[in-house]
Length: 169
Image (cartoon, rainbow, N blue to C red; front, side):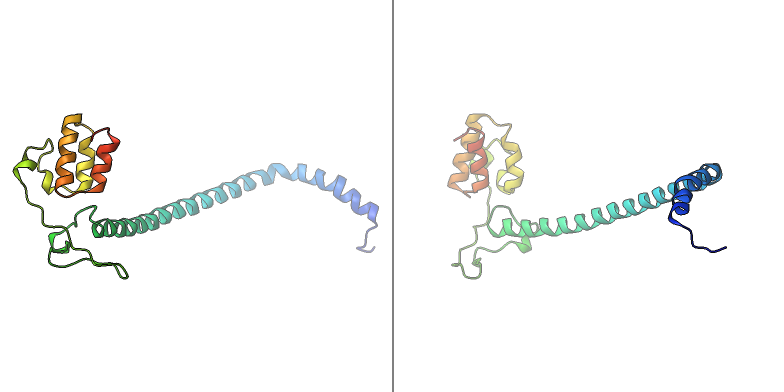
């Protein structure tokens, strides 16, 4: 007897005998298929959790780096104050960007009687990012007072823009 089968015999095996054999063996093989599928799903879950955790860690590090760079740029342009007094430029030291003309640093901030009269406590010691959220609770007259003071003293565009947005000045 030879191992070669005619094409009709091959079709009969695939179309008839294989499905019958599968049905007879399914009861025995089904639990192993279920277990193998469960293991694959668990492995995919572990890999997914690792990927998400690693992605969050990487994103957090990159975000912190970008925030530090953005803070440095905002400080450089005078929008916010430096985190430490030592990092702030002094009035005598001009600040400059390569290729740009030198600009003098802002003068040190001193509280005045006008600042004490403002509706925001310790106004002169606050950064623009600390002032802006407090503007929303002020009346139009109070917004006008802050606007006038800001124009005549520090002229911070972010604060003036927010006051305009809120309908003051």
